Image 1 (cartoon, helix red, strand yellow):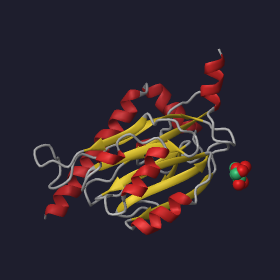
Image 2: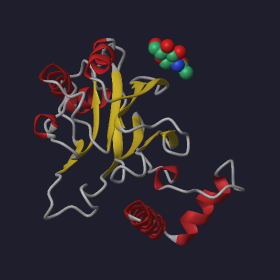
Image 3: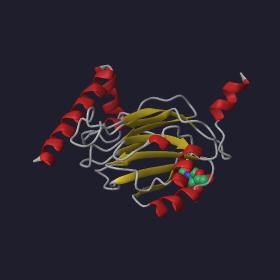
Length: 226
Ligand SMILES: *[C@@H]1O[C@H](CO)[C@@H](O)[C@H](O)[C@H]1NC(C)=O
């Protein structure tokens, strides 16, 4: 019964998001977008498919954390869904997608609740990658101090305060030493939780600068020079 209520709440929330997403664009713009998109026969279920417009040398990103322990997270990149419940490549725990920072191709998708697995995965990452992560249910099991330090190295400023069943979404990069501006945390607190035992689901979207092969940001370099 509780599960059914949670699913209902999640469905309503997704519906509100879709309506909000549509209303943000003019209806004319919305329909033009529908006509332009390659596959007009299938409905567009989540908002990351309405990819936001980004300046040249940027990638559009979209991250939504899981709804309680019921509906998994979604990660979108450059207008495409990369990880989602529909694609069946998300699981409880930490969900991660990494991309080549220069050409935007998907390097890997990964999920785990195991700290040893996560450590090996993080240590295998080369510089110059865009790193997107989303929580589902609880992410703290694999978050050892060593792992949290590696997230700080990718630009996280909130990871050290992420606790049991907190929501967390994060976009960072390897080898850049840039602080992330795309990171959110929702705190598991009985007084503010919207689900029975979990805080609200989080969403971030924005435009991430393309990286050069050595992991530096083209955009930062050009704007610093002008
Ligand atoms: C993107 O760059 C990576 C690393 O250099 C390379 O392995 C991959 O094949 C490239 N992808 C495309 C589509 O060019």
